[in-house]
Image (cartoon, rainbow, N blue to C red; front, side, top):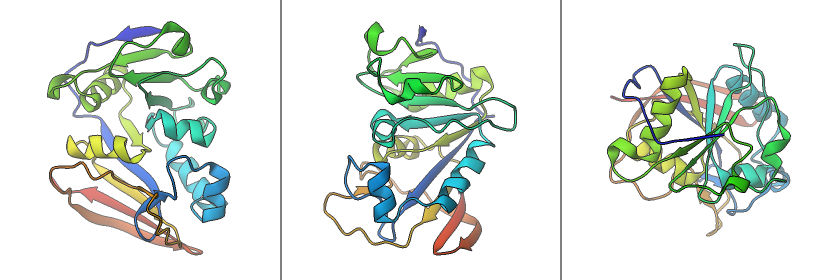
Length: 226
């Protein structure tokens, strides 16, 4: 494991796509600790959407996700991409992971951790890299991840959330595309988790690239307006 704070400036080749499944009322979960089994019961997950996500993973180089989202999902999705390797998973965390955490059960997937502070060795020793970021545009979470991906040639990046991670990338103007599966459910709960947490200073606008339906699901692909 290598702890790093150094970043590179050439990030123009890195394309970042936010990929989510959301309810008709804009939720990605009925409550913050919703497990995959609960998501299936709620109507957020089925085999059609699972195959949709696997296809996207097969065309990407890296995945950015919050540690909490990985924990409640039971680990990463280990998929071989079109370059013959598994995408690198970059997990944003303030505490790291215990040695028996589910994420370490996927040996073919390289794992990076991104944190705003140094992590204890025992909670990060399974990671290939630890990116330590700070405040300010040049050393933010988003800039650190984009720079590290550019440095390693990980040019196709998927952002899987949750809502706080999504908001960080939208606020930084870093999202190039948005791919969302609209699920046929209205959550309506005060505990629901939104696609983007309400912490942005201005909206982000998109142009519809494509739309398709399969069963009761709608798959929408948007391109961010620049």
